[in-house]
Length: 309
Length: 314
Image (tube, rainbow over all chains, first blue to last red; front, side, top):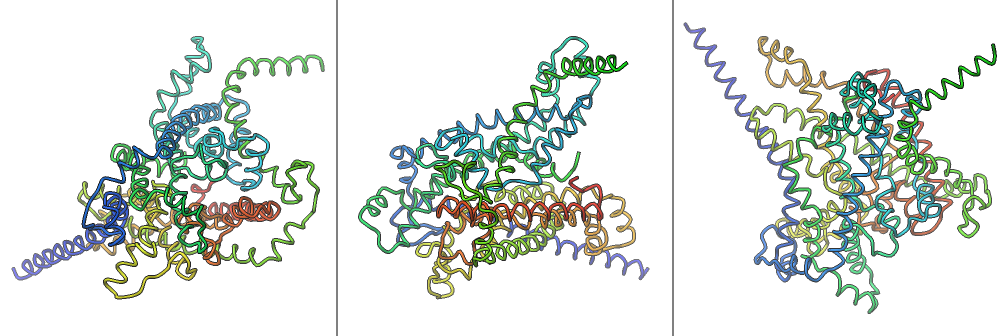
């Protein structure tokens, strides 16, 4: 009898211990989650704060007065921002579409087991992941051989259009999920290669296309590097790069001691504190708003590379 | 006899051409793109051995042998940027490993399905956003006159404002923290996927044996994900000569005053190419980086093959 009682209290004790350690895990997880999102909330709160309060209080989670002036300014008075927004949307749509098309075509060709050059092509793609020529020759190819400086193509083509890694991911998906017999049957029925690709292979590969497309979209949307390297005239620049300039130039003006009147004039035209933070919100907003809808694909996409096909 | 062999070969080529002509065309755009974007720059590393003169054209610029490399390695820059790159990467790899593995293990202990999803989703939000946004966030925290950290320092700890963007000594901590903040979620998701694939019968057997939570983690979970931990770590060691340009450019606001602790090889190459116009030095540093990087990744992959063959890159 007594042993039964002691074991049952033991079990109870164990459950209590488990509950306490569960609580601790939840506390740790909540703290880490807050560290991940609170910075974004801070930026958002600054963007809807009153400019004068920011001057007095500094950046705070609890501003004494709110204002929507920053957003009004952003969309009414700042043509540069609206323009950069339009450019970024255009570049993202065109870039992602072309990228998916040429990437999936190349991946499909490599995935065809009967294609005589498939191994050579696979190595050709793979080697780009191992070695690269570095920034200087890459820059010289685009700016001095192809003369892409200041053109829209400079935002679409360099580096972002195709990654060997993505091609190889799609290749594994095609070879694992598209039946060879299906392709052969269509071929015997007289369908051309391109038709087979469009009507049979692509519809069967929507999951991988969605995942790769999502990552490509994000990398176009987030890109500022190509603007930094190739855009000298500041006219056709991406949203993220415009934001970079807005942050760094104010910083430069503040740290430089001998600000001339010319610089002072630029400073007065620069977006003020709250407007800058509103820009950041506008730049990251679409991603965060769409995130709940694509997070399943995103998480799946993150693990895709670690599981070899 | 010979004629018939030639004839056969010809017809095979012809047959292949007819069969695979269209499909070769489909591969062509991608192949051309990689040729321009990746292979042309690989051959372009010859600029490191030239004194590039835009007026004469790149191919007609005079050869200077190893002069660019001699200048580069005589300067203190070469030592500083190599040291910074390697030390930062060591810190990123080790601290990132501890953060992401422990988060993955804790996350796996959570039975509540909805909360599990919420935690996991928030962890990877920083990974999704651009370094521009991260630069803004860090600025909102560290801005000398309005920053959140300085106002906490003054109101809570009664300390004076710190001018973060001009003090090199703080940056190793800031950059390691920011890098971990941005990237731990990604690695956490990968480790989590690997934990989930551990054979559940092991945990059931342990439960019957009366193992507690810590014993489960110590003797089943960690050994179960050990191969993937080793693989990912080795592959990041293979990339120890490279660094994330965005982190070092955006988060520091490209401040030159703190470059003694923030200049890495990628930053040096960028500044030499775009700001000071020392193309020779830039391309020498770039070739130094990519050739050492190439050797390292081959070695890393060779070691991965020895440890767990199925995880090797090639």
